[in-house]
Length: 348
Ligand code: 3HC
Image 1 (cartoon, rainbow, N blue to C red):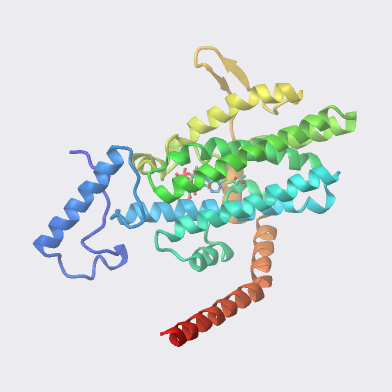
Image 2: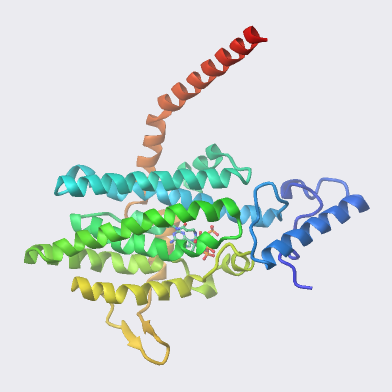
């Protein structure tokens, strides 16, 4: 029989780390584990939801923590390239929109850290992974936003690519992640539209503004295609992630959907997507597109993109500068709890 958890090296222990050191499970424990695995498989096969208190294979838990925490880090680091432009937005209206968008990204990070916490990993552990450079976050946020047109293009293309990837995650098999993604996607949709609308205003402006938009599109297009991750054949996590219903659509299929959706939008803006190989393929019913520079992608993912060091340093500084806020919140909570227990003693 095909089972979702069959190939998962859980051992007989609640923790994969201790699997080799615990004594062999008794027959009744073994039976209980097998039944839990069968229940898990049945939920996955029926396209149901796994909830935090349900039994799950350690590898499923680990994959979710990896993906959700990377996703959370991407949202938080993703605030930086645009936050950089809040003080330089060209009008009050654009500033208000940008402030709202950047705040939304912070909120997305918080929902996602909370979703990952339901899997037993603390926020401190996740942040330590980010700040030490061990944890990944999206490659796209390691590129600079050089002009105001970059802010529009980040909304249109980066958030557009993010939505393409995130809509299927609303159907992810892990309940808290799927539910968090519903609100995230609604907000990402506003982000994409505000970016497109800002660009539409610019392309109706001066020749210099149109050139600024085209220049930003030229610099961001290929980076956005790489955002979907390595080709399916080079994606070590995809097969299992899809079998578990965490990922629903493969990296290459999402990338293709993004290209197909974006070509007509570029035509409305009157910009050229910088790929001479980009053309409609009647037989495939999709656009063909050129080769992505995967060496550049991996260099960026591995810490050597143009802004990796700056992004991490800014993030670590923001965290350290916020220590007094966390200290104050903790002190306040302790004071409240002491006051509440004193009051309940008086009442008793
Ligand atoms: N940037 C950095 N690392 C990437 C990456 C990218 N664009 N694409 C893939 N990788 C990493 C993977 O994390 C994995 O590394 P790991 O094994 O050390 O964790 C490795 O490359 C191999 O990739 P796989 O395809 O095997 O990995 P996945 O199956 O996890 O697929 C993914 C990668 C499609 C990014 C998937 O993890 C995913 O859908 N994640 C959730 C969505 C997300 O994180 N999006 C990031 C952008 S969010 C955003 O843009 C914010 C918005 O406000 C704009």
